[in-house]
Image (cartoon, rainbow, N blue to C red; front, top):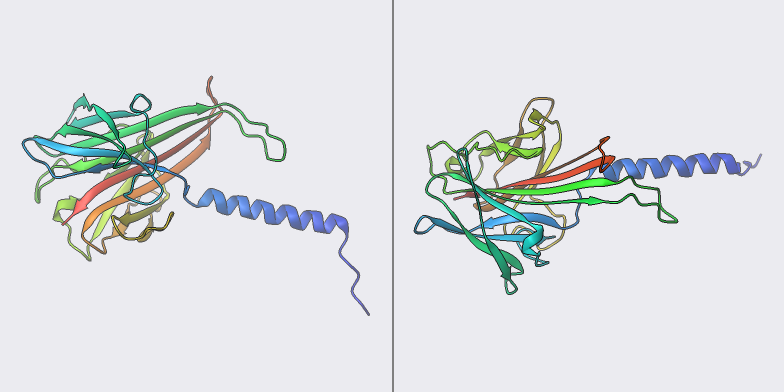
Length: 252
């Protein structure tokens, strides 16, 4: 006996289920759009050269940002100082230098509020506050403290070991914090030169509950670990909050 064709209602339910599954997968995956990233150079004469990039492939500049749209700071202990940057069209970056008397951070941040959208043909989206933060560990030395300095951003990746002590084959435990509390989330990591393809990472790791995520170090060089988080948020200026954060460090 031949099978009867599926009803229109069944097809509609199937399509809806597939759509929701697709949306769920999209929300669970990292955003493979441009990432804000701080690329430090070699410390000399008490200063470290830095480039602030907007990139799709780590660590290659793709778009030159406007300096007025980015906040860049040097953090050493509890002291914070602004870092002046200017466009470098050849590097497709904002370039500057930060003081580096001891172990510290260089932190870059972009924040913007996108109005609510109700475009035809796509689901409505509430007003969203988006923040992108990158912090680079600079002037680290083996056996010294300072690698766990906090920037104080809402979404932040904190190393639980000194990257200057690492070698290829080691693991770096990192804790992802949101509003100061551990956030169980997947992190994505890669190193400079690993790939020229967008959204391609050397490794991933997951922090469960309050446990850290362990990033496997597979090569020497400049590394980046990134994480993302979004949630509904009832604020006067927005109803949704979205954050991307990354941590940059050198492994010799």
